[in-house]
Length: 460
Image (cartoon, rainbow, N blue to C red; front, top):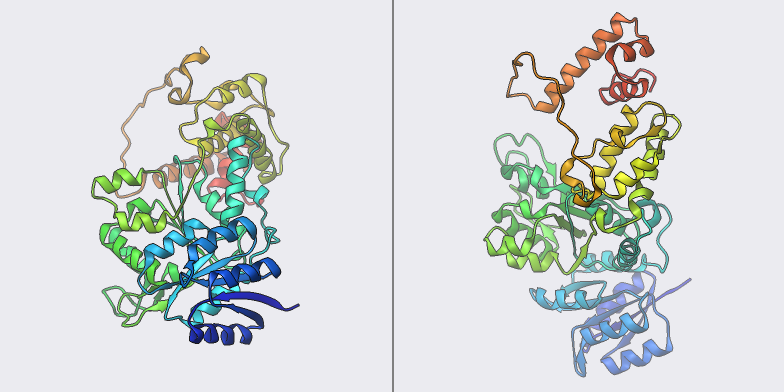
């Protein structure tokens, strides 16, 4: 089945170049020299995608982008812009353009863009579907899913805002999974977790010998995400000097590895997120305004869990079944009091906090019914009108000071202590887990959970 495209430009030489390039890709191109001719062809024929110049004799290409969004919303439209005119490109993508390409046209980049545009279809691609990622039935989540479905068909940079733990990376993964890049890599990076001196090497790569410790060539995350999506989580934590280099990479669609004299073209969709207020960071001189306008072409706010109503219990039951599958066990259920406690809780840590609360309750509760006390809800997140009193602090005291080596991360230190206690107790009871759990004063499920967490479960 032949594929058809409409190309619009008032320069015959450019039309000829575009036509030849597309024909070699098996795409039948129809030409239009102005907006009026383009409108007539769009009314008479169906195209798989459209490529239009911004400046035309009878108007602006952005006008056509807006019209296509209304009359042909399933057809991706790509705009041609003058080199370095990113403001126009951003304006076009805000209007609904699929992507942009600059003049003079890079033919390899054009071919990649055409293939990506042709991969767009009215339905999400097979594989990961939206309902497998974004759980919930509240009005806020239904609206979010609709927006994700629409954004998945574009290549515009998206900024995902929301509180910590609300599911920003899940939204990014869903946008990727429903778009034409779904079969290509999704690379997520937490910008705040990379030491400042290593950020450039991580993002753009380096060449052997370019600095002390560079023993071999290293591919950057931009190159690793080629053809797919790069998700920059906590982008507000990037150092200012790296913000400049990131801005250039987005504008030029190219990166330069440390120690390399040449730039490498990359075909990457940029999604970014932060729980911080970027406008406030700009006012404080911690984030560049020009980068903000490039990554925030379209903003997607993710609702906090407390704004999602009945989704709290829906997610709770989903997590409990997930835990049961993980441990090959029967799913636990929430008592009426536990359900009421969760429904009244504010969840300052959002979905991540709900997951952690339930995992802890599932592993520590007696039997298969989780009571309100098993949830151990923090007083910080309890609504003042629930009538519940904060849980009293533990009554035990530390009998002796620990000789803690501060060079070891606390989590690793505590894990080593827990591992030693478990192994000693299991050895004492000849690895009878039932009697070992009883001796430790924990449930059998809790013991199994701890063994699995520490990599000591020989049955898995």
